[in-house]
Structures are given as structure tokens and as C-alpha cells.
Amino acid sequence: MWRWIGFFLAMALGAAGGLYYGWVLDPVKYVDTAPDTLRVDYLSDYVLMVAEVYRADGNLSQAAQRLSLLREKTPGEVTSQALDFASQHGYAEADLDAMRALSAALQTWNPLLEPAQP
Image (cartoon, rainbow, N blue to C red):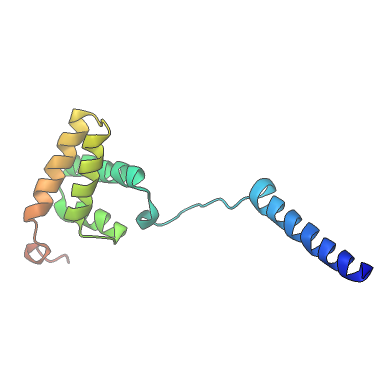
């Protein structure tokens, strides 16, 4: 009987020690994750950064390519979702304007009409 108690006690201590090590001493640190794993608040910040770059250089195809890294939806849908979140959570009006300009441009953008790249 003591062998069974010792076995289960060793199993319990090993499991508790493994959980403690994995959760407290050396937890997983996510580094260089893909943009499609972002929460909606970080996704909105990412779309805002893309909108600011678009406002600076005016390259809509590059902005759409950056937004296509999110893979969930089309770039226009992602921008609209981020714009809704940003307007509900008090982003600055200049940031909202940049996101609106990008969203409006993406609504009429057709990638098939882009000139071919050499």
C-alpha cells in the first residue's frame, strides 16, 4: 500500500513542481508573433500605424499589403473594425481622420487595376 501512496505522492509533487516552474519561474514569452494574433486594441493600433504611413507616403497598395498580414478579413473590413474600436475608445481626432482616410481609400481600391511591378 505504501508503494502506491509514494507513487501518487511523487506524481502529485512532480506535477505541482512542473506547473510552478512553467507558470512562475520560467513562463512562456511570446516574441515575434504574427500580426493576426493581435487583440482588437493592438490591432487598432497596428491599423493606425498603417494609416499614418499611408498618410505620409500615399501608397495604397503598400498599405493594403501591410493590412493583409492580418489575414482575418479584407483590408477594408479590418480598417472598419479598427475604426469602430478607435472611435468608441477615445482615440485622438487626428488619428481617427487618418484611419477614416485609409478606410475610404480601401473601399474603392481595386488591386487588379494596380500597375505591374517590374
